[in-house]
Image (cartoon, rainbow, N blue to C red; front, side, top):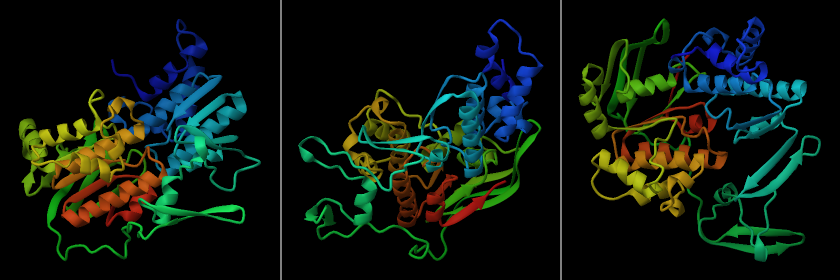
Length: 409
């Protein structure tokens, strides 16, 4: 049976109060206070299906913290949150550590996590690369020396230095200097270098679209146009309707009022089967959950997507190479990291060669280097192929690469 957000957090207190005792007013007050701290008190009566991904993420953390645990483990707790809501969540976690003496381990790509951490451990290539405490923070990256004296440099360093396949190394005083050998770094797409078509074709549009879930109105009379050759970043705080907008464009949900059109077809007027047929031919969608088949390899997942979209020709390996996973093409996705699975999902969308690509928070679980690579890739894909790419995001790196921004909320 459906439960409310407040009830989910109250249930998190059962380990504190005992499973056989009904929660009282104090338990509900504690749960309400936690929701208020993360800006969700006004959503306490909402059911899970009525919440955005970011709202669900914050409620999950509140439920985990509700019984004041001795040990709290969090894997990317702010991956789908905007900066303000991430700050609120980190403050809540920091308060728990101080007042309840809870040992907390955060796994995060978010640099803001370091603001509440007493100790920061950096892992690279499966090993501890550096460790710093708040009073004695490291001034630079520490690189692990492998057996035989081998060094593996961070990919970000190689990109900035323009090193692709070969480099030279020379000892100077007490430093080792590594330089590129006759190769130019791949050019990043900047706002000043983009060459968009003079009159890019209209691929999708919203006409006076409104969408409500029960009594809550998420979108109201929204007009928007998405043209070929452009990357559009849909921005806004958690719960502002970014994911809802993508679902409407994909025909996965229908507007309460107004029209949604893709390539001139009003998809909001089609039945479920017709919308699925249109998606197969025109739309590639990458959700917050990758939706991959775990027992298939990365390449097989991309090829499965091509088959579903009836895409002719090859291209699976090229798409995986574009997202930096060519060496992992034969690996089962169940053995890939969360960030790698997200990149496989993006590769699957690229290989489908659709006119409209919709991506929901594509960089939320990626480090800055891979996030920038994905942002540059999506911008280039739009510019060079003439397709429309629409991304829901709160990542400044992706916003910087976007040709257009649509702000919600």
